[in-house]
Each structure stands twice: as structure tokens, then as C-alpha cells.
Image (cartoon, rainbow, N blue to C red):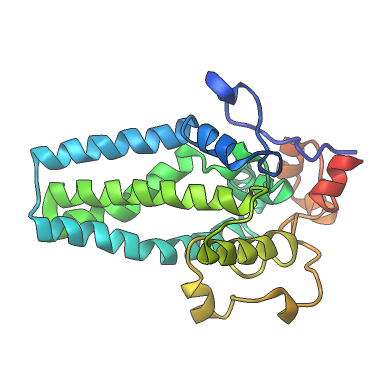
Amino acid sequence: MIEARNVKQEVISGGIWRRSHYLDRMTLKELWAAYFQYPAILAYIALSLISVAVWTEYPASAVRTVLAAGVIVGLYPAVWYALHRWVLHSNWMFKVPFLASTWKRIHYDHHQDPNHLEVLFGALHTTLPTIGIISIPVGYAIGGIGGAAAAFAAGLITTCVYEFVHCIQHLAYKPRLKIIAEMKKRHMAHHFHDERGNYGITSYFWDKKLGTFYDRAERPAKSPTVFNLGYTPEVAKRYPWVAELSGGVATGHPRKRDAA
């Protein structure tokens, strides 16, 4: 039996991150503590402060600064939707040997074990270039170096918010705010019922516009690929690279695998 948590983890050193964390076993207080000690989150915060320092050295006008940051915040749901639907849920990355490990790390492992906190957090070598490519040129076009710094900071802070909301959605915790509870409901359906929809995390605007928003009652049949994203044992025979990195191909519900 393949262990549900047989995943390639990033090297974490120091503090509470000397061991793995699973959101279905954590309290909200424990999540806060783990969140603000995670290396990627600390990196986002540090880079945000550096961006503020750059802005003070090369300031844009207040209007251009707010506009640069606002555009990035507004673009975020569309960018996330596109990446989540057409990259993370692609059926082409695992077919390319040098992309297989990236696809495994950035999303396959998360669907294999949705509550594994280290896997839930984005890997810096994939998130930072994406944030920079999207935010810096837009900000520079609006307000020069200062605008670029403001836009990059906005992208980093938005990513921090997204990461925390994503954690809450997997935490053994019922959100008090109705809007967060609704986000969690949709995301849980994405993970445990049908992965071919509800791609948003903090916003489902683009799901509604592009026809991928759904309620579980609208799709009575559970997707057979909700946990493996289409990377089945049969597919692995032809494209073995993810299976080789994972020690095989796990099948079935992650929680039931865990109890086996």
C-alpha cells in the first residue's frame, strides 16, 4: 500500500517546521503559529517590505501607486483561475519529463493529500516568478519603478491572503463569516467531489462567467479523477515520471488510504 503522505517535501529547517503538519488535525491557533513561521510566507513578507523600501526611494504618485496595486489585486482572481484550470489541472505537464516533478509538487501532491500543509503552500521557485512576471511590468507601465514596487508588493500580500484562506478551507474549522464558509464549501467540492470546476479560492467570479461554478447537487456523480487529476495507474505506465517520484500511484480516498 502506497502511503498517502509519500510526497517530495521541500527542505524545511528550524522551529515547528522540523515536522509535517496536517490541517485536519490542527486548530485555528496552531494554524496561525505555523503560517507565520513558514519560510515562503516569511519570504513574501520580507519581499513586501523590500518593495516598500524601493518605493520610498523611487516613489510614484499616490494615484499611480494605488492604481498599480489595485490593478494587481483585481487581476489576481483571473490569473489564479487561468493557472488553476489550464496549468495546475492540465493533462500535459506530467507527459513532459522535465515538467513532471513541477506538476507533482505544485498540484498533484495537493490533491493526493489535500490536508498536508507543506504541500498546500506554493513553492517559492514557482510562485515568485509568477508574481513578478504578472505584477512588475504592469506596475512599471503605470508608475515606473515605484509603480512596479507597489504592484509587486500588492501581488505578494494578495498571495499571503490567498494562502491563508486556502489553509482555512482545509482546516478542521467552521468559519464564522458566511462568505468564508461559502468559499470553503465550494473548494471542498473541488477537492472531494469533482475537480473539474470551482477553481477559484477567494473569488468564484470567473467560474460563474466561464461555466465551471457548481454545487454538489448539480453533479450527483463523483468524479473518478478527483484525487489523481487523471494521472491513473494506466496513464502512469505511459508517462511514469510522476509515479517514479511518488513511489507509485495511490488510488482511492486519501483519508481511507491513511487509515489502511
